[in-house]
Image 1 (cartoon, rainbow, N blue to C red):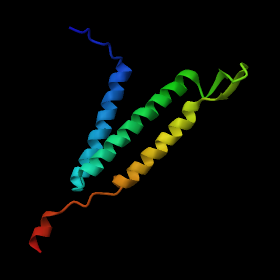
Image 2: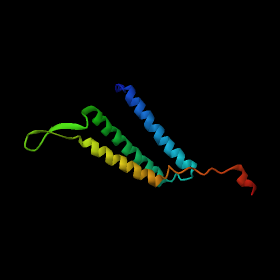
Image 3: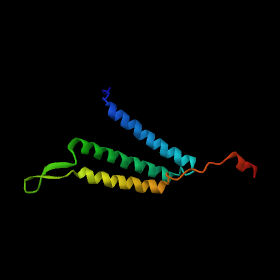
Amino acid sequence: MGRKRYISKAERERREKREQIRESMIAQLQAAGKDTPYLLNKVEQYMASWDNAEAFADDIKERGQVVEEYNSSGNLVKKVNPSVNARQKEIASMNAIEAVLKLHEPVQKRSDEDDYL
């Protein structure tokens, strides 16, 4: 049998937050009657981008916004951490998916009075 892998508190919290976001998005789609396979797949794409954005954020926290790397000539140079731009692109992708899902729009709930028209 395999050994259990230790999961840090921070990782457990991240996984819980991820699942809360995912479940919230799906619940909003269901409430609006828009839980189609296409839109549910968009939720999964959003979550993949969320995972990437979180990983880039971790790298930025660990290495900083400016990193030292060797260039092609072998000289040590300072440059913007590539994770900064990559994270911005992931967030833009997430925003585009949110626009497709239209989760920012309020769900029109049907009232009981509608039955008496």
